Length: 90
Image 1 (cartoon, rainbow, N blue to C red):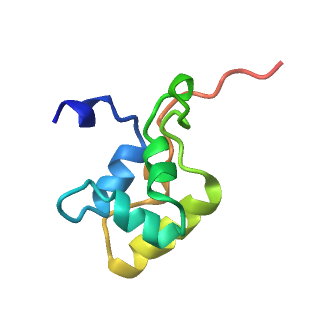
Image 2 (cartoon, helix red, strand yellow):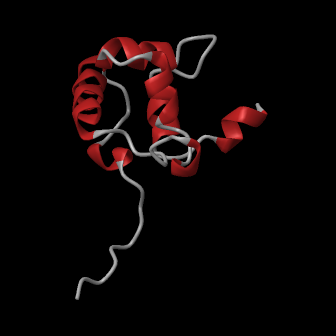
């Protein structure tokens, strides 16, 4: 799907782990977190398009991590973060 290719990580992979047809887990994640479907969608959009740049807000990430553990989904805490080197602080 063309739209799916534009979705940003790690949000896309986390939502996909909660996948139920026909979406990639958007409705399921919205229900778990109590967030509106459009808010969840914005997690996968770039910041310049009104999104979070792929970042899931920490309160929602904690809820999803707990739910994933209960469902025995193959998600680790590290999956909620990009593997990007930290910039040197001066």
